[in-house]
Length: 199
Image 1 (cartoon, rainbow, N blue to C red):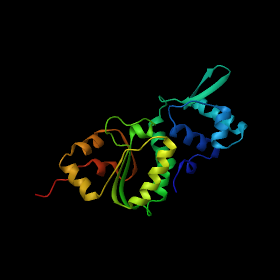
Image 2: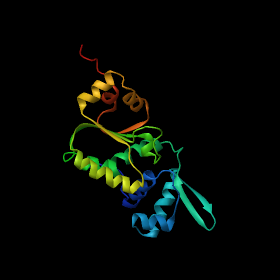
Image 3: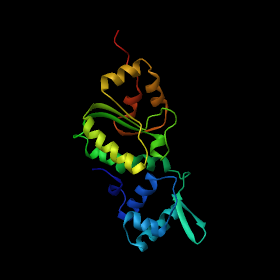
Image 4: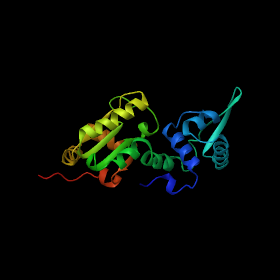
């Protein structure tokens, strides 16, 4: 299973990155971080100092506590957000249980979902294309809804229906294709390419 741990030697840093990128707009103080990632305070402080030094996170004094949050202007912010979405949380579970979930051609998370924001209007959080074992998928979605404390807006299509709707410029699919997204499974170029319909 590919993940940030394959690239980053420090287990504590990987845990911190997972937490920060799963909750990108939240602020945390040191003792809170040690509880959330279940690591020693000195190791957490050391990694926070390294992340501050490279500019990935920033700190802010509030009262008698120092809070840490992601720096959204960091040069590689978007790339790390994508990598974390694929290698932790729901993305990791979907990739790990891929065979159990059926034959998945594409799994896409909306940019708003990955950034921890609620969808606007009828925007979809997650789009899954393939021959999906729905009961297995529903278990994962229920767990994620409980974690988020809100209902997830997700859609499932088989590949034929997805390609048909894409070729016909279905408004729902067009909104997905024009929105920001992270591909958890599947190639983005193939995902957006419109096939010429058979006449």
